[in-house]
Amino acid sequence: MLDIKLVEDNREVVEKSLKMRNFKDMAVLDKIADLNLKRKTLITEMESKKALQNKMSKEMPLVMKSGSDEEKKAIREKLKNLSDEIKEYAPEVKDVEAEITDVILSIPNILAADTPEGKDDNDNQVVRMFGEKPEFTFTPKEHFDVAGDYLDFERAVKISASRFVVYRGLMARLERAIYNFMLDLHTEKHGYAEMNVPVLVNRASMTGTGQLPKFEEDAFRCDADDLFLIPTAEVPLTNLLRDEIVDASILPMCITAGTQCFRREAGSYGKDTRGIIRQHQFEKVELVKFTKPEESDAELEKLLNDAEDVLKHLGLHYRVVRLCSGDVGFSSSKTYDIEVWLPGQNAYREISSCSSFTDFQARRANIRFRRENGAKPEFVHTLNGSGLAVGRTLVAVLENYQQEDGSVIIPEVLRKYMNGLSVLSPIK
Image (cartoon, rainbow, N blue to C red; front, side, top):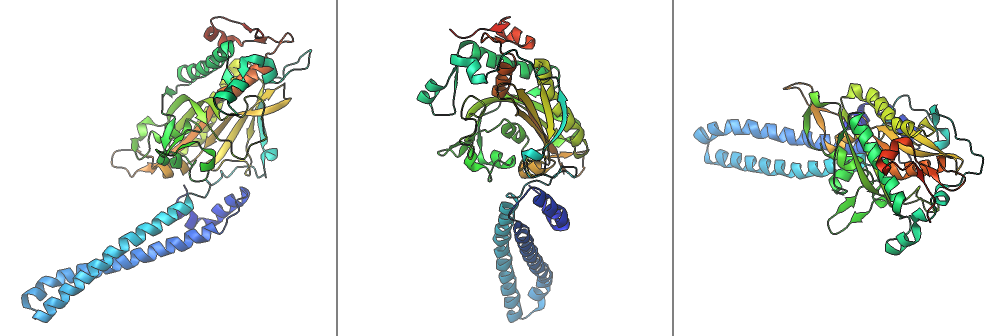
């Protein structure tokens, strides 16, 4: 959520950012200005009446002591009327402030000053690349052809719906191996504290990280309880500190969790209909950081490096891209995507997004810190990134390590999680 003072005092900056994002409803800024003027007017009128009330309250003892009965009656009536009028202002101010909040919640974060301008993902900038594309003596297959019956889509549809999958046998083991490897790497090498968090969260949590109200159609909701299945562990992890003031000494606070994630993928029908690239349910290891504002840029680079390290250990070729203004997510100020090479598709595909949200989420979730005892609380900066999407990492392993006979070489770092198995043979 944007600071209303930023919208008021730096409107040109806000307008420039929104235009770079291709934001359509620019009139919303006028609406915020009008509502804020109304709020200030109401507060000024209320404070004026309170001042008069205080003045008359100080005069009342003298009137009650030496005034006439008519004067005593008049001052009592005036004070009662003032009290009633002042009480009427509170709900009016509250209603206007709620309306301002509703409007501001619809506005995306301000882009970082160095964000490259562009319309969509075609304008993203490649920052660096790691490794080389693998060479094959045969035409590489896509992951669903490599996996064959290890991935059971028909039975998944029978027990659930489309865009779900059942992992069978050693494929289930390999997916779990990737998941455990990622968590071990981030906790043992990169210093993240592991959390086990709920996958059902309340509306306040979804609002705090920016999924609501804008993306409600993308979420799976349990209507009876007004709870939502998480689209990413970013939601419960970030909201661990909602409505709290923490000590600066614990920052940066780095936490991780591996969870099931759930997305309707609204608006994506017809895309990636085969395989496990775009599922309604998938596993992901998430990295979240809470930092001081002046440290967030450096911590974003560290977080990005931590996510990249997973692919380096797996020996997978990838590139890092800086998202342009038209492709940066709603809550993000600055985002890097990691795109892994998939030889079966002959394309790079996103496997992680690493973002800085500045104080955008912290304002929504009211997460603050104190630099020292007695200091005024400040909003933290929040960061997160996938470390990584487990299903897409499995796809990358299958496509990059496939052999002509249909087998798949298991990357060395995963073998201890596979009881020493080095090759995944075609399913019989």
